[in-house]
Length: 144
Image (tube, rainbow, N blue to C red):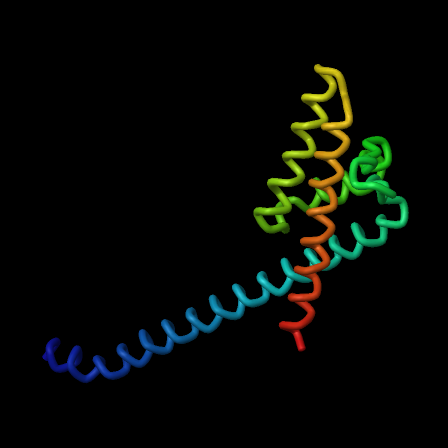
């Protein structure tokens, strides 16, 4: 008798199990998609903020390549906060460049700050801005 009840209930139990798996998979997929979309939106907002701050850029465009310079004070008071607050959203290249800038400034505090540091910081910062512009355009292209 108990075996017959189990045999009769098997299709129903399989239906419940399959339905549960399908529901779980769908919810998981939708949640992952929503999280990815939110992260991408937050990343674009951070990019917008950084690009707006470019009006007071810490990297001075040079008349000659050897004249390029970097204003740490402007960077520290504007772009740095946005970069560090949103570091978790950025791709590896930006994170590495931000850490490189931070490490170079710390190094420069302990040794004489010279043109090498200026040039290096200028190049690192401009690499970040270039990458942001390219990534921004790529993200917007994918959304179309």
